Every structure is written in C-alpha cells, then in structure tokens.
Length: 75
Image 1 (spheres, helix red, strand yellow):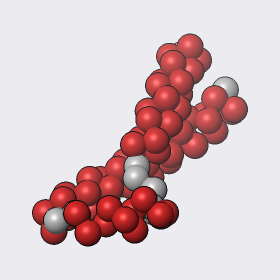
Image 2 (cartoon, one colour):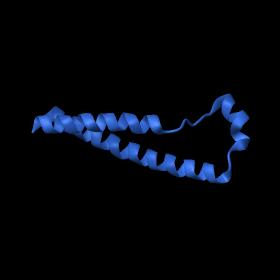
Image 3 (tube, helix red, strand yellow):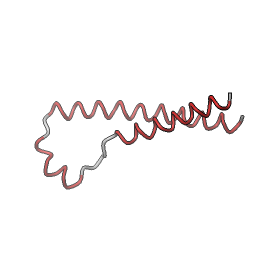
Image 4 (tube, helix red, strand yellow):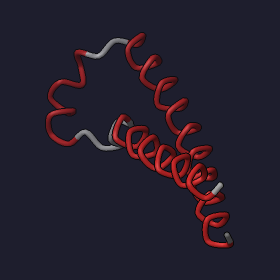
C-alpha cells in the first residue's frame, strides 16, 4: 500500500513540476515590450484560456500532492 501511494506521490510531484513550467511568466520584460504589438487578439485570448487551465490544474495537483504527503506521513 505504501509503495503504491509513494509511486502516485512521485507522479503527482513530476506532473506538478511540468504544469508549473508550462505556465507563461506574468512579466515578459523588454522582449515583450518590443514584440508585444505583433500579438493579435486571438493569440492573447488563447493564451489566457490555456494559462487559466494550467492554473486550475496547478491548484488541483498541488492539493493532491499535499494530501498524499500527509497520508504518507501518517502511514
């Protein structure tokens, strides 16, 4: 039982890392100021919906990660 929960915990950890790395930065810096005019309305709205989905996934996977950490601690 502990081995199965540990494997799920490891997979949740790796998935959380991947989801966080896929999120775009909140600040784009100087390169965003220069190339910002080239973005169209459609690409901005697609990026926002994708970022919103990634933010939701981050919250859920983080909650699963914390719960699995507590379960493994109490076992």
